[in-house]
Length: 134
Image (cartoon, rainbow, N blue to C red; front, side, top):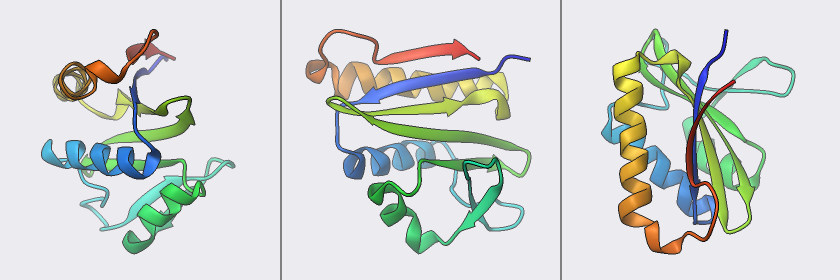
């Protein structure tokens, strides 16, 4: 079964882009902390879920030791977020299969707003916001 993935290129360094993404997701009611168990989780290269202390998240992100994390809407709804550094910024991938379609539309519309209002003048040629099915 395919899953929808929204990708956005943010023309900022990771230490500036990640807090922006966190803030945008928090405004929509998503949290790094799972409401069911109060844990922050990521996935390692072996496919195992790993817990992370809240105070270590930002440092782990900017150091490059952390490349993905889950954000939670409810115990049963989450969005997996991965990122990579690219030329002129960072690309974030949001795996939307853990969200209901209505909320996924809301989330992607906020990304479109970010692209078209905040960063529009900073983009060169190429894709900056995409939705694909993998």
